[in-house]
Every structure is written in C-alpha cells, then in structure tokens.
Image (cartoon, rainbow, N blue to C red; front, side, top):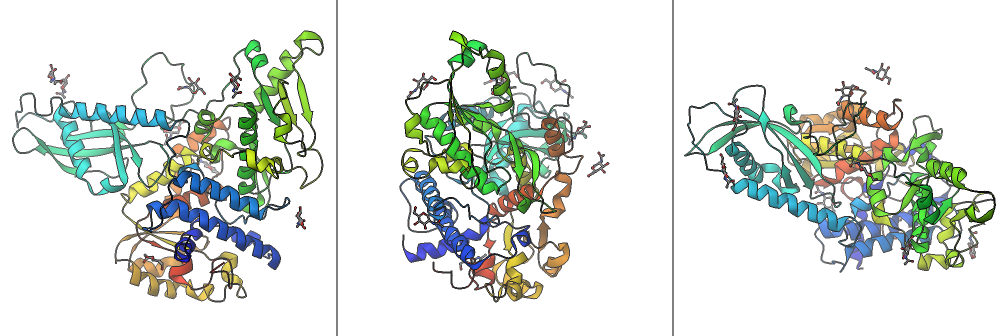
Length: 576
Ligand SMILES: *[C@@H]1O[C@H](CO)[C@@H](O)[C@H](O)[C@H]1NC(C)=O
Ligand SMILES: *[C@@H]1O[C@H](CO)[C@@H](O)[C@H](O)[C@H]1NC(C)=O
Ligand SMILES: *[C@@H]1O[C@H](CO)[C@@H](O)[C@H](O)[C@H]1NC(C)=O
Ligand SMILES: *[C@@H]1O[C@H](CO)[C@@H](O)[C@H](O)[C@H]1NC(C)=O
Ligand SMILES: *[C@@H]1O[C@H](CO)[C@@H](O)[C@H](O)[C@H]1NC(C)=O
Ligand SMILES: *[C@@H]1O[C@H](CO)[C@@H](O)[C@H](O)[C@H]1NC(C)=O
Ligand SMILES: *[C@@H]1O[C@H](CO)[C@@H](O)[C@H](O)[C@H]1NC(C)=O
Ligand SMILES: *[C@@H]1O[C@H](CO)[C@@H](O)[C@H](O)[C@H]1NC(C)=O
C-alpha cells in the first residue's frame, strides 16, 4: 500500500475511537502506549481497506475487500498480541461484520439476496398492477386501499431526497391516516452505508391529492416513522403461538435460543465447550477476539459451539469504572445473525441436557474429552470422536485466555468467522432512527477529547484545537452553514458545542435520549430478553450508536487531520 493510502487511512481511523470514557484509561505507561499506537496503525490499515472502497475515493481497490479486511485485522491483531496480553485500547470500537462489505459467500447472504430480489420483484409487479386502472373520480374521497396511493408513494420515494443512501425493498398495503386525505405507508429498506444485508422498517404519513389524469400527487410527507397507523407489521401468516408481552415493534428480530430437540439428537451432536476463562470482564475487543477464536475452532473441528450468552461488561465501559456481570450478548450483538451463521447451542440448556441424558457408565455414556490447557492444539483434537470436547482453561492469566487456542501454528488453520458478528439490530434501529430523523442528510463531526486532551505530552495541541472557538473556526470552513451537524464525542459537557449552534443545526447523542428511555421500543425489547427487568443503556451501547451514526454522515470532520495536527496515537506516530 502506498504511503498516501496510509494517510487516508489515518484520517478514518479515529472513527473507531471510544468517544465517551477515555478518562478511565487515564495513565498509560509509555511502552504500552506505543503498542497501542502500533495496534491503532494496524487498525488503520484495516479501516482503509473497509472505507477506502466505499466512503473515500482512493485509487487502490483490493480485489476482494472482504478477504482483504478480515485477513488484515486478523494479522494486525495477532501481531500486537505477541504472547498473551491484550493491549488493544479500550477506546477503540472494534469493527464487526456489518462494517465489512458483505461477502457473497457468507452464510445467509445468498438467502438474503434472494429475499431482496423477491421483495423487489413483488414491489415492481404491485407497481404496475392497477396503477392507472379503475375509475378515477377526482371528487371521490381518498381511499388508501386504492392502488394509486401506493403507486404515488413509491414514485415519490424513488425520487425523494433521501433516496441516495436508501434501497427500498418491500412495501406494505397503505392504511388510512387520522385525517381524510392521509395515508400511512410502511416499507422495508436497506441503508447503503451499512454493508450488512440487514433490513429496517420505516412508516410515514403521506398527504395526497388528485393530480393530472388519474394519478395522485403526494403533497406532504411525514418524518421518519411518522405513519404510526402503519407501525405494526402485518401478522405473519400461519398459526402463531400467543404472546404474553406486547409484540415487539421490530417483529423481524428472532432472538430465540436454538434448542436441541431430543436426546437422540443430543447424542448425535458433536460439541465444543469452552468453559469461562480469564477473558470474562475484559474489554469488549478482547471478548470478540476470543469468542471468534472459539467459533473458529468449532468450525475447524466441525462441532457445535456451546455458547454462554452471559457477558461481563468491563469497567472501561461503565459509569463507575466497575465491571458489570450479567449482561446479555443480545444487548450488543445480533444473536439471530450469529445463529444463522454458525452452529451453536446455549450453555445453560446444553448443561441441563447433558446432565439429564448422560448415563454415568455403559453404552449410554456421553463421551467427553477434557482439555485443561490451550497448549493442546485444535489440530490434535481434529481426530477426536468424543461427543464433547471440553476446554477448561485452567491456570492463571494470561494462560487462561480463550484466544490463546488460536495462537502459534493454530493461527494458520483457524479462521475467525468475522462475518458472524454484527452489532445488535436493536441498537442499529436506534442508529437508523437518529439518522432517519435527519433524513440521512447530515454532516458529521467527531471530537476526541477526554484524557487525550489532558495529556499535553502526547497531544500538545489537541486541547486547544478542540476548544469551542477553534472548532467553530475550523468547522465553518469545512461545512456549509445550517446543515444538520451530528457531533460524536467523548466530551461529557453537553453545552460544550453551543457556539456551533449559531451556524448549524447541532445534534448530539443525548438529544435522542427518549429512544432508550423506559417508554421506548428499545426498552420494551431489552426488558423482554431480561426477564422483565430494566436494562440500562450503558456507555458501550452509547459508543456503538454514536460511532455508527457518525459513519452514516455525509461530510465528515475528524479530530485528527481536520481539527488538529496532533497524531491520533500520540506525538510522532502520524507516519508509523
Ligand atoms: C514473547 O515471546 C517471544 C518468543 O516466543 C519472546 O522473545 C518475547 O520476549 C516474549 N515477549 C514478552 C513480552 O513476553
Ligand atoms: C386490477 O384491479 C381489478 C379489480 O379492481 C382486478 O380485477 C384486476 O385483476 C387488477 N389488474 C391487475 C393487472 O392486477
Ligand atoms: C376503500 O376501498 C375498499 C375496496 O377497494 C373498500 O372495501 C373500502 O370500504 C373503501 N373505504 C372507504 C373509506 O371508502
Ligand atoms: C425463530 O428462530 C428459530 C430458530 O432459531 C425458529 O425455530 C423459529 O421458528 C423462529 N421463530 C419465528 C417466529 O420466526
Ligand atoms: C460435519 O459434521 C456433520 C454432522 O455433524 C457431518 O454430516 C458432516 O459430514 C461433517 N463435515 C465434515 C467436513 O466433516
Ligand atoms: C423509568 O426508569 C427510572 C429509573 O431509571 C424509574 O425511576 C422510573 O420510574 C421509570 N419510569 C417508568 C415509567 O417505568
Ligand atoms: C412498551 O410496552 C408497553 C406495555 O408493556 C406499551 O404500553 C408501550 O406502548 C410499549 N412502547 C413501545 C414504544 O412500543
Ligand atoms: C478532513 O480532512 C481530510 C484530509 O485532509 C479531507 O479529505 C476531508 O475532506 C476533510 N473533511 C472535510 C469535511 O472537509
């Protein structure tokens, strides 16, 4: 890669920073900082591969961005994790599957593509059908079931200003709005800026009047998700078990835990069970790195992975700096996508079944191979016929980290299934809602402050360059006045950016608090998976949402490069 590529890269890399809580990482020894720096540079390479192709126009285009980037991240992480200590800074957000271009070979992609084209085919047939048919009495009251309504809405959407980043998939039948002349219409869409196959729903309120000939004209359209009457998706056909809780707004999320159906099925299965190791309560980046190692080994051994949905959020991401155990994987990641991508069972159910069906001796035994240490390699286990391979991760840190299984020679045979990890769709629904409220037409400003601004040794100019006046000075030169400006930041003081308000429509994450308040859809959906108990919207979730909203902005102003000449990893690291 040329050095200019690398520069491009540098400017993108701060996207992955942790914008809310860097103070927790306060005093970092210099040697460690250097390693962090190295790791960030490696990340930068990766980020380049991801973003170069899409966001930034660069000349170098890898033949297969997916392979390029997942290989790059694996190599770079492996390089900075020489013998065991996970030095990736907690203030960077590790990219996940939906940040990569979707490989057409990833599981689910083909099915998703098929679903999409079926949807689009259905959409276009519906479009032609009866679009101009039927009597058109201009004085008759508007009837939302009139096919001309849907035709008008589709034509309008296809032309609308937010079309550029949105792919319209299926439409639902319009329903009457609260007043005559209004119809609420729901549809599914995909965001081009998100590289996963994930679909989202929007529903808006349209006002229509008779236009030329038989056509109807859209005279007014509501904001994102304004068509409340169309909010509830139509019930899927076929029998459905009755629900106790109110149906979730996003009925497309299916987080149910896959169960082993019968004893015979259980006995036929081959499992790989990782007992909890030293990774528990470490950074989210370490979690992903370790978890993907386990999934990679399971794939290599052609076994079902036994997964613990219980997670521990590291103190680096919590308000009081204390680790919080008992978090659910599904708060942060997309379990539905995971279970479609890899073979897994849930730990609790698995252990119950095991206890229930194991005969202690004789032919009914469920055979187990206990593996006390990571030093037994995946290759040595390949031939093992036991029902269960049980990795126990005995010993002290760093001997008991999961990812050590994938080190050394194993690194050459185990492939981490990066495509299997997407961020939670519930969080992405919030991202979509925020971006949607600005009609996907906004610019982004990323302001890194926190401990870096305080560390004058490593960042001599950062504090001054991100002062309110300096920001106004710079940003007004880069972004047109009165644009929507979304500011992703780790600056805790809400009014810090007030001076920009006389030039822009400023949006901050905190402006959207009601999206995770306890009257929100998100709240309803997360309490449902937490046995009815309240789930706090924690700092890590905020980082995910803040970063992802910023990704979707049009013009992007970065702290490093655009606001300051300091290097993002400290003094003299710009060209590492
Ligand atoms: C890591 O291992 C290599 C060789 O395996 C050794 O040379 C090096 O000193 C080790 N580094 C640390 C930090 O232990
Ligand atoms: C148009 O609508 C009429 C009923 O209003 C229906 O009988 C006819 O099949 C429709 N045409 C097409 C092409 O679907
Ligand atoms: C709208 O048209 C449908 C059939 O096309 C009819 O069943 C319905 O009663 C009409 N609604 C109104 C308000 O006229
Ligand atoms: C949810 O997914 C499971 C498989 O994990 C499937 O058995 C179940 O039918 C799905 N439920 C719905 C409502 O689609
Ligand atoms: C993987 O295991 C399944 C059954 O568990 C078996 O049908 C399949 O042939 C195995 N594939 C390989 C490559 O061993
Ligand atoms: C919302 O949550 C707060 C705690 O964060 C609680 O004090 C309040 O009573 C809750 N409100 C409702 C309506 O549940
Ligand atoms: C959340 O659930 C409550 C009842 O449990 C319901 O009244 C409310 O409408 C739901 N909120 C949303 C936004 O779906
Ligand atoms: C930020 O700086 C980079 C590199 O200098 C430049 O390409 C980009 O256009 C700048 N952003 C804006 C909004 O001008």
